[in-house]
Amino acid sequence: MRAVARGMAPHSCGRTDPGKVRRCNEDAILLRDDAGLWAVADGLGGHSAGDYASGLIVERLAALQRPDDLCDFLDAIDDVLEGVNDELLRVAAERGGDLIGSTVVVLVHDDDVALCGWVGDSRGYCYDRRRLRQITVDHVHGAREDVTRFAGAPAHGQPPPGALTRAVGAQPRLFVDWTIAGSGRDTTFVLCTDGINKEIGDEELDLECGRARDPQALVRRLFELALERAARDNVSAIAVRFGEAAA
Image (tube, rainbow, N blue to C red; front, side, top):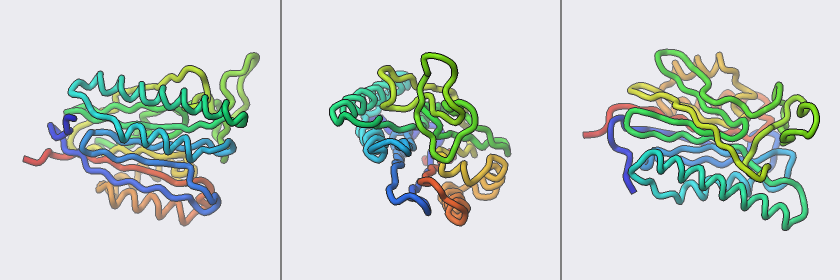
């Protein structure tokens, strides 16, 4: 496996917490600075076995061997997520019960570029040039609610407001959206589940990214804010910062 030590050296910190309301933590996180791969997955609340779904995503991504070619690595990530999607559909059918699914957001770094892939409403943000921008687009119809349930694409009309329209384990064919997220020295990325952005708005997140650019300090501060508030959902976040590679 090729380690990502060229160009900009990544430094990351991540944390996940059940929050103040839910007993079960259905979130899962992955930090692989060595492979330039980070992920946050959020098992679907209101459905069954969300912790199993998010855990399976992180487990399979953690086992990936990174090839030299970036495109091959992205294809491998897509293949992993498609495989998990198929497995979750099979397990749900065998149990004869409810959907088993999860959202996911993935960050990949290679030399001087970072790419972000996602399914659902877990988010990716980039803080550079003293401004924050969301680099993902929620797969949600209308405004999100406290519990985001999967609705898919109804045969007639539109899904109800707040309905999740895409998730791993929810549909026979999985589509992962990818975008070039940018990169460069002194760039910070934040991956999070909606337990963060339900409690912390983008303006406040922008302010905290500017104040605490070190990943550990930033994650600590985000959890302080989320957990001193309602923390109605599981809370998970990863901060990744790129600086000069070690000689």
